[in-house]
Structure formats: structure tokens, C-alpha cells
Length: 394
Picture 1 (cartoon, rainbow, N blue to C red):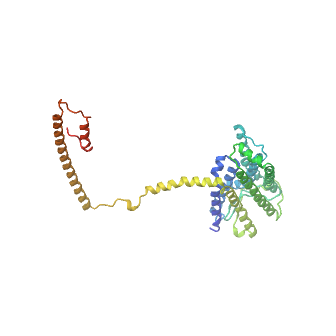
Picture 2: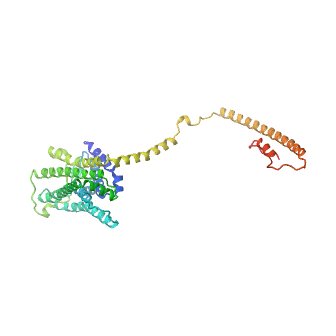
Picture 3: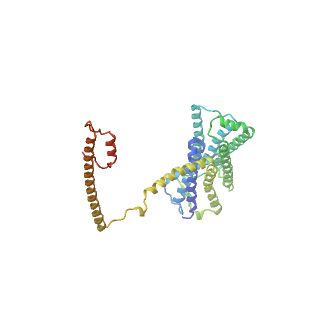
């Protein structure tokens, strides 16, 4: 494998974005859950592609490539759309317009979040077909990539819309910060009175994550537009001409790719793992994360302790007894049984004799000839001297 760091970076990043999943799931935060889903799937796609097409450009798994290339196009819009949705919610909170909503209002808000976080990227995927010159490309070590007919139309469709969403997100984030600094005391009191799980620290983590992701996305998109336009754009000669020979699959061995384009391919590939690391950094070191780590540790520790208790050390296992030792032990056990039987018979005889003598004495002592009852002090005193393991003589 030429670039072993590619699958390692992709799969590790996929695992990192899953770490904050439990507390975002409990909060039912659709934008952050959508970010986790988009980043996780994108990293898995990049990891699989880097393994399957490591050192080759074979045309394999065409259906896989058809699906993942569209998903890669959608992921370009997904992160800005999710951050925009998040900032809309944060701006409502910072402006103190947020009040306790009813079940119907929460449901409508969830549908709006889903439409923005998933519906908008799906529309963006469909628009890609307008500037899709052929089926897809295969780049050595990187796998299948979406094909784009580089023209003015591709710039407007594929890059202008995400950039517009990025700018809207930045504007909403700025307005939210202005609201916060103007109403600092009212903001904290508003969060407390609304019985929301959102605290000031969580609010700032969400806001900081959205701003950093948008700055990072703005830099990447701007560089991508510049890199695409530096060698000029192709003229739009019509729908039929652009989509002619649409089933073609472009293959690009690394030895035929110019060094600057190869470096750019490496850079664009690492943008997704870097975005995942940003997300992990903002949500994996706060108070919520520490509580989750402690709860997970407390849940796992008894499992290992129980497992260790079921595995006995070799020193505690019984030693194998030889036939000679077994016969000797059996003989000793039989002798002990005989001795115990003889002792029991002797004690029973002594007790019976003692009981008979006591009865005769009591009959002599009682002037009226009555015999003491079983609950009399004499009988109880006599019973106290008889071992509980031995039956009373009849």
C-alpha cells in the first residue's frame, strides 16, 4: 500500500466523531447529530476507497462509485447547511426569543432541521447532474471521485450555493454574539428559566464549533475555486455535448498526474478528517464528555472484575489425587465412620440409663405420684444436657 496513512486517518476520524454521539443523542440535537452522520459516512467512504484503490485504478464496484460520488457532492453542502441550522437555533436563544415550545412546535422545528440538514444536500446532489460530464473518475490511491464539467455553470451550482450558506452562517453567528454581549445577565437567566439542558458553556462550544467549521470551509472552498479557475474554464456548448459519452469512467494513475494537482488532491482528501478532528476537539473535553467517560468506566469495570473472578488461578485448582492416596483417604474415612457410630451407640446407652435413673428418682420424690410434664424445669434441665444432634431416648 502506497499511502497507509490514508485509511488509518479516515477510519480513526470516523471513530472520533462517534465519541460525542451519546450526549447529543439524548439532547435530540438534529444539527449536531447530522454533522456526526455526514462526517462519519464521509470518513468511511474515504477509508474504503483508499483501501480498494491502493496502487491501482481498476474499474471495480461501479454501483458503489455511483453512490459515493453523489454522497461526496452532498457532503460539500451538508456541513454548511448543518451549521446554518445550528446557528439559527443559537440566534433565537441569544436574542431571548426562545420560549418553552409545545410538542407540535418541537415537531415542526425538527422537520425544519431535517429539511435543512438533509433535504438541501439532496437537492444539491441532484443539481450536480447538470454539470456532470461523465459517470465518475478513479484516482489511484484515492478511489472514485465525482466528475465535474469545469465551467461557469459548475462554479455557480457547486460552489456559489455552499459559499452563500457559509456567509449566512457567519452572519447569524455574529448576530448571536452581539445579542449575548448585550444581554449577558438576561441570557443566563433565560437559559435557567426555560428548563433547557443548554448551559452557557455548551452554548459557546456549539457556537465556536460552527464558526471554526465555517472558517475552515470558507478557506477550502475559496482555494478550490481558485485552483479550478487558474487554468481557465471550458465553454458550455450545450446539454447534449456536455453529457455525450456519459457512461465513460476516467482513470488517473498517480504517475500521470502533475505534482501540483496530486498535492491538491491530497489536501482536499484530508479536509474531511480535519473537520472531524475539529468536531471531536470541541465536544470531547468538556464537562459532558468527562461525565460520559466516568459513566462508561464505571460500567466497564465491573464486567472485567466479574470476568476475573470466574477465572480461578492454577494454585486454587484441586490437585489430582493418585490411586494410592485415594485408597488411603477412603480407608481413613471408613475408620472414622466406624468410630463415630460406636461413640453414638455408647452415648445413647449412657443417656438411656441416665434417663431411667432420673425417672425412678423423680417417682420416689413426688409424694402425690404425679410425673413431671415435658415442660417442667427438671425435664428442660435434662434436655439441655442432651446434644441436639442426638435423639432423646424413648
